[in-house]
Amino acid sequence: MLAESHFYFNKAADVLGLPEKVRTILLTPYRSVKVDIAIEGTDGELHSYEGYRVQHNTARGPMKGGLRFHPEMDEDHAGALANLMTWKTAVVDVPFGGAKGGINCDPHELSKKDLHAITTVFVERMKDVIGPTTDIPAPDVNTNAEIMGWIMHEYSKYAGFSPAIVTGKPLDLFGSEGRAAATGRGVMDVLASALEEKGKGFSDVTVAVQGFGNVGSNAALLIAERGAKIVAVADHTGGVANEDGLNVTDLAEWVAKHRGVKGFPGGDAFDGSEVITWDVDVLVPAALENAIPEGNANDIKASIIVEGANAPTTPEADKTLVDRGVLIVPDILANAGGVTVSYFEWAQNIQQFRWDEERVNLELDKKMKLAYQAVRETADEYNIDLRTAAFVLAIRRVGRAALSRVHIETELPF
Ligand code: NAD
Image 1 (cartoon, rainbow, N blue to C red):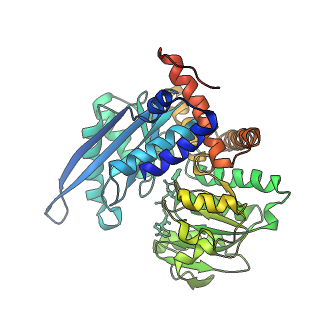
Image 2 (cartoon, protein in one colour):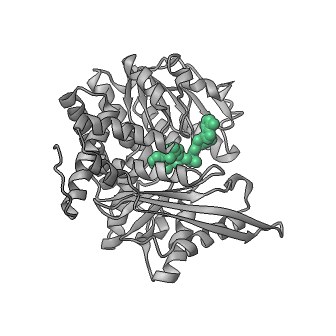
């Protein structure tokens, strides 16, 4: 996975003619930490897990990135996703660098008590390398506001009252209005910009969404609210389709109760893997990486793909799709709404001041639109696709900051 994130970086670095020395500086992670987590489970047995945090780049500010609790989490995953965070924070121009981490556990198989115990040990082992001005975690796959609340509480035991240690916290515990829906809202914002440039509106398009967790469900709700038809949704339990448009509010209620879309009575069931090639105008992959491999790139019918998930498209599939003229709004732009409102939450925590939801949403919409515009302008300037343009924009911002901090015998070509 790390190789893939380096692939896009190098493609953009080639466009810029970036010297080898600077490539090495920008790609080398700042720090990588692994911790062992052993707990006595509610079943009375000893269970051990591994926790990771890769801190990639600190040139533009404290490092920032999610925590993923997933059996496949490892150093390679954390490193690749940390790397993406460095470019993502730069694309939306928030004052952070990139980090990512997590634990190789499956929360679906754990009792709440065990999940809490694992999280607590993770914080105890990581407390010296994270902090409100060094590295600020946030939710990612299988982590949520409740877990962020536990992290804040645990970290504050060591460092004193520290609400700014994590973002995505519960509203009652120094969280921000609008954070829960922020990534989905950002997906909706960039889709609005993409449609506008194609001379279309939301009511002109049909949409398929893969993944109905935090990102997928909020994106679907907001996109449907603006008049688009969400005709197919899939998650790890299966798929559900309705060509007249699914009632996304009802679907969200169903998923909250049944932990998956399977069995939803408001549509027809289908094999979830087919969602990627559904006959729609817009595809929103919002589950896990590599959802769009080369194998199905030619069968994709959508003319716009908005990457709610991180790294859903493999480099080979990306090339096929770009050659076919599909407009891909890349992950480091499309799902940057979450880190943007995380920045608002962190700023509110530091100032001990609260914004209302209207202000958060307004500022988020503005940031996402500006970021889309900046990426589009870069794409037009170099005659490149949006993904390469997003990396070019980010490399320019991070590169300038990195080389302003130290003396290196080299010239930046921009
Ligand atoms: P989540 O845990 O809330 O939801 C994940 C969803 O993916 C669930 O609906 C799950 O059923 C589905 N899924 C898992 N395996 C699947 C499969 N094989 N086929 C179809 N669906 C499957 O996670 P999330 O926070 O919504 O994150 C989703 C993606 O968005 C990840 O790539 C994450 O890194 C990225 N992301 C999340 C945020 C955020 O703020 N939460 C921000 C930026 C990027």
